[in-house]
Amino acid sequence: MKSRTRSLTHLVLILSVLGIFSCASTQHRTGGPQYDSNPFIIHLDIPAPEDDKGSMIVVDLNNDGLKDYLVTVPGHIAAYENNGRKLWILKTDIRLSMDSEKWGLPGQHAPGIQAGDVDQDGQMEVLFLTEDSTICCLNGTTASVEWTARPAIPRGAVQWEHLVIACFRGEGDTDLLLQATNKDGYRMGRYLSAYRISELCKGHLKPIWEMDDFLACAHTAARVADLDLDGRDEVIGGTLVSSAGQKLYQFPLTGHIDAVAVADVRPDIPGLEVVALEEGNRRSKQRDRVFLANAGGLIWQANHENREPQDAAIGDLDPARPGLEVFCRHRGTGLAAKPIPKEKFPANGYQKPFVFDAYGNVISDYSTEDVTPEGWTPMGLQVCQTIHWDGAAKALVVATEREQNGNVALIDPIGGEFLLHLKNEKADRLFVVDVSGDWREEIVILNGNELHIYHHEGPNADPGRASLWEQPHYRRNKMTWNRSTN
Image (cartoon, helix red, strand yellow):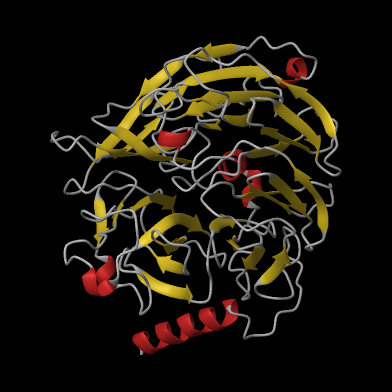
């Protein structure tokens, strides 16, 4: 009976997401309305992605209380309202990149754009870098240029490559972090400079602080988050840096960091924690570790059979356990970065995801060979992101097919069960974010030059819960992300 009930539950979920059930627009106790169609499709008047440059964020650009969409591809920024109406399109040489270790930041699938009320006038601004290292600040509603600035480029770098809106002085989103990689060899974002936006817009280009030895992640850019909850942001990477530019902690690596994320993994410890995933030196016994640290230092480190974790999704994956869990999708064994047909796929090549609890203990371990549905690539999973799908306490994971712009799936990360398989999608980009503001999250897919937004149509299991956007670190996470982090 339990098996039959579970199957029916999954069938209802699948039918619901694919729009087979009717969907009326509903207003939640918190947040805005859900879309009438599922998926809701927005046609974009910009080119489809041809490579891994560019992505998307959501933000309320026009102060109507609803989340709008900002989409970037080489040469274009597109702004669309929540209802799909085009707000504006700007043709510009926005800084975007492919593999950051080869081409510099911001990295694969990074949006290369920020939005916030940086002058505290109650209106949203949009900020980005151009290829000549110019910071451009636009009016969020009209795309008119409010100001530009071009701070000095570090001597060892080619250009400024990444920017992040931050709060370093406790005065709201009025500061800016710039990052650049070294121009020679394996490129990592070692150069940081922090600025007051109120000074930048006047042409005063002296930084608050700067750093030339930041231990950055290998495939992704710096993040910011208020780890110690003092109202000021720290900088997140292989080094944790204080709001004043002082090093707080540096992870003890044998290789480099593939991905980072910020979450309240251990509610019993004050503040927030950083999860960092190591790709270690193959000659070292201490390698391929997952680290948990905070502003005070290391909390724990662990590995699982020296499997490289590579991507992670952090959330309440098992509500029966204290704190949050860390899902690691695993690289797979000896795989090239291109699709391999199933008939030629090596028997030992399948990914073997595993899950740590909040204390660094392995609580789940399986092979994608045993869980992926018919038609899914044997290469496994990629772009894994935590999702609060139906309002229940248990978080799930959304992922794409590895090394191809293919299908999308909703997965129970503890056992690997595929709860939903979007077989007809060709996901050039995948983004999980709370569009409706009701603390449930939507699946946003960039398929060519269309946005496809999927939502859960059933009732919200916890309708009174506060929106995720009320968590400052959620806002930071969703503003600055790429394929290597969520």
